[in-house]
Length: 394
Image (tube, rainbow, N blue to C red; front, top):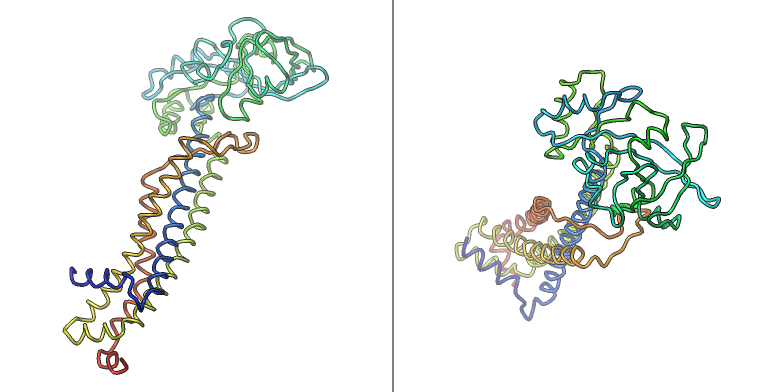
């Protein structure tokens, strides 16, 4: 192996007669590097979108929902029954429904959620997102998102008219008790909170709540907790996890990530054609050298290994440079956030980046594997040369 590696390295170095081959070798290295870099950056961004959306969704929403036809009349009893289940951290009842913000002939539909101000902070991170004011603790108090506050020009202590669909368009006056920003445009522009008692009056639900929200120790144990809750409460209740509620969104993100991986892997595939071209030209140029090596006792396996190692050196250098460049770009994007996004389209206002080392390892492994396959034909052709024929025409 040492002999073959030394010869392979020597063949890759520039010579007076082989500068063109060395230039093609450099282009092959750059091609692999660009492909690996693009894959690492794009997959990191797609993973970042996935993680960022997941974090924002579960930060302002329960991780498990418990519901019942026509609402839950005994939320405290339900909470008492499930609090002993392993992995259940906390639970809180809430009421949810559509409402209409109305001011100076300008109207907007919003989602109004009635919460228990004492229990809600144990289930979601809403309290951490409040930038001014606090949770709705008094009658007619309402907590609104920063984008909604901007759209209506509302500030702390100001009054807003909210129209109830449950009471044939009856108008209710609410006072802004706080403004929150979650970093997700859709929530900041459409989600509002009031107390459960206010919401029960607003939606004409005096003795029921829409659902009980549950927080679990681990997001990905929500399915297990769901099964335990159903065993405890019985089939009269419906239980959904955050994954089921947002299934379409995360399925589309997963599909996009897979498609982007396949598309960008084609860049590496194209670079591997350059490797094939480089090795074929190298075989043609080194015909005399191959004949001399074989006449001195080099086996066909050794000749094949020399050109296989040459291709692997090219791919390894390209993969290493591409990975280093990809990690650097990801670090810069994550640290300085210099790419801004329209939040009303992409949910988030900056480009999220999250490197998963398993993905990066898979990308590097695929690049080297594809490159290895690209070396097989030229290496085989080199090993089939007849030393007598190789030396005859030199």
